[in-house]
Image (cartoon, rainbow, N blue to C red; front, side):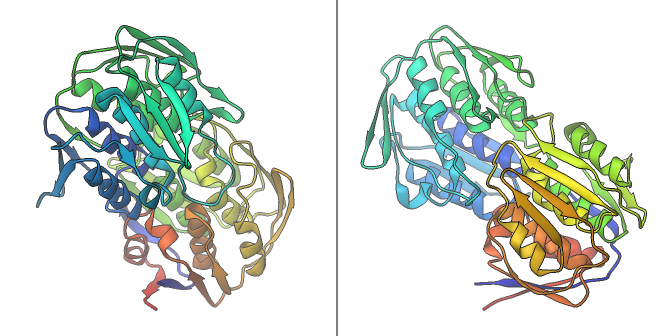
Length: 421
């Protein structure tokens, strides 16, 4: 099991190319199940989660190949298998995105209850409710969601959950609705850029979807979908992580391909902390002063502050000049990184879904353990500025969502290396 060793204290400076968005690519990959023709996807990141989805799609009859130009080609060759087994689905929650496409195209779906990072409860009731609203029958058999629906029909549905709109439930609902008879209206739909990118892909394949990027999505069902050539949007969470990397090291980074319009809430908080964020010719330019002001942050559905950047910004605020308050309303239990940051000399106290971060003068390198994808990013960021060496075990977590992060950081001045065990 690989680990990272980071020697802190280096100021980052230079340019970083932001990769394609994992959270956009995964549902688009699942949507290839709907297509009658070949699909060509560009800007797909090479990640553990992407490979897990490709392995699942292969089991479901999809042939794929990586081309010399970096593009990914997919084509459905066999539609007999409709079972997404626990062996694969348990590794990654986004595997649940095959539910809607399988039901719509093959009229039945058997999908194991999903896994993923240990960041709190993420029920699938909204997914099943959406499929039932379209006319499917559902059951739970041996830990698998079983759905059948010979003829799906358009309907109106509300997808607001306990912690806001569900991104993956919205993706499943709209994918299933593309082949349903009539019009489907999704109210309280997720507005994330990744959902808009999925809709753009489906429309390029012949779907008729409008309103994406708003809480009300309209889908007029079509008889079939063809293929298309589509480029995945860049990853706003990776961009936000490198913004924090520049800020925490008092550095200056140009993030090529980063889209400022996808990070408005993050930019607002960073500027209040004292981070300079400017639009550049190729993306976004980040720099920071040495004084970091405390702020209050509450995670919310898009366009609010993303839960996927909560841990990274917490690492930054550990060095703030005062007390900051962070509340996670999306995943109230997503604080397993708190104890590890405190091992590095941070002063953080948790109270339910909220943590109070008391800024300290410095962090100290220490052995730490990653608990999930974004927590691992936070610990690497803390290691960049900590005095001494930080050893972060369970490097596989970071590989789920960041493409060659150690190479990108080293390329702008970080002292970081991957060590195989």
